[in-house]
Length: 230
Image (cartoon, rainbow, N blue to C red; front, side, top):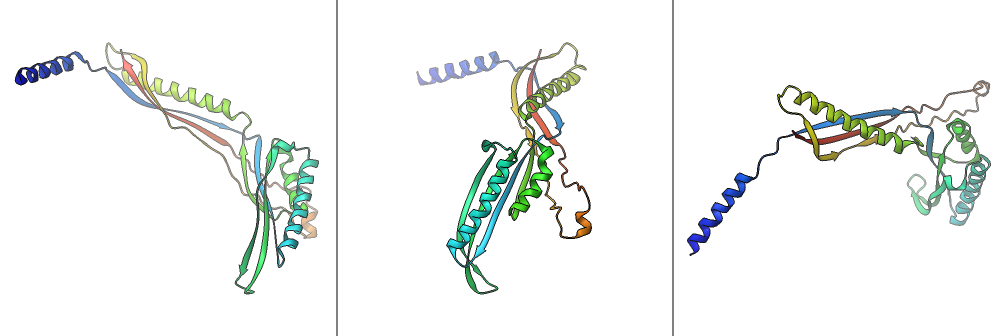
């Protein structure tokens, strides 16, 4: 009885395997690339002070931060577009003097939505007391729209490649997509800010200096698509 059941099971498996037909298909990759000019910037700056007494150091740092925040507000930047990221106060050992001191710092991030104000804002921030520019990341206010466009271009590219390959095969054409895998990314330029400031009188006579090279945002959509061949 056991042998009969085993034979019937094997026969059933073989019949099932014969019924399952291999679906003709083609797997292809596609790329959609878009380069856009940034129209916004995310600026991260910080204020830091060092001294012997924790209270004095914190007070001095708070005074500078107050000036910075008031300056940002005077520039007409909405309160929703700037934020304190980190506030630190810690004891530090100076190996040169072999003494302990206190360090207070505070980091502020500014979302600047008008790049024409960039240079003036940066110089005024330096004048207000910031002593560290931690980074500038340029962005686009329409990034979602551009990413959508790049994805569409990637799919069209994949379909066109598949049709190119299949065009030499008689009696076949590209059908529905069975599987789509996405591997997209966006590259944001992150230039280093050059502090165009000097006590040199000759330098001060120069009316303008370019300190901003915003470059381009590169949006790349990569897809892998498996199409049915009909």
